[in-house]
Amino acid sequence: MINRAVLTLRYEQPFVDWINAADPNPGHALTLADANEDSTAYLVSVEDEADFEEWLELNGVALFEEELNSWYTDPDLWPGDRSAALLKKWCTLELHTLVRDTGGPPIVDDEA
Image 1 (tube, one colour):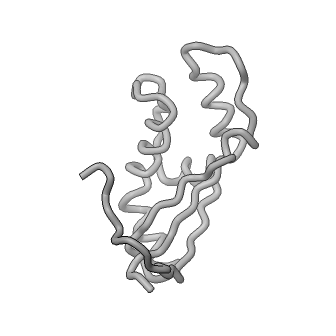
Image 2 (cartoon, one colour):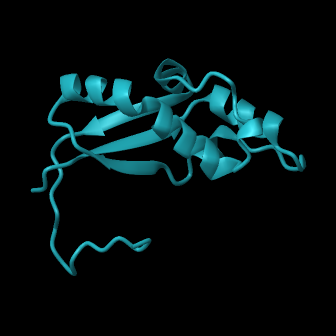
Image 3 (cartoon, helix red, strand yellow):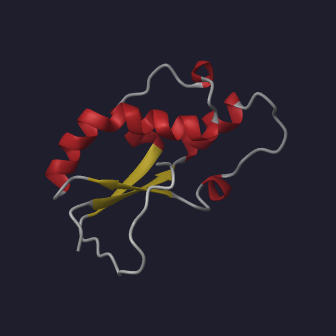
């Protein structure tokens, strides 16, 4: 077991609506199913749901901006409101506090 929880993030329709509306090269409209085909998972330092709410209050804006940036790197295309409250409306956040490392090779940061 490791000292992290896993946070999975799945988009709701308002996020997909933003993706399609902000697209500088509109063409094929993204569907909710397309957007959630491979959900993002984050390792977070929390022990339970109460810790997560505190963590989200401190890190929600950065988390939201990370997700927005994964679609469009130009912040001018991002919504003005990038609060944790809007993130919770635009995404389903699911916390898993029991995380087991099944072994294998060492965990390596591929960006380091």
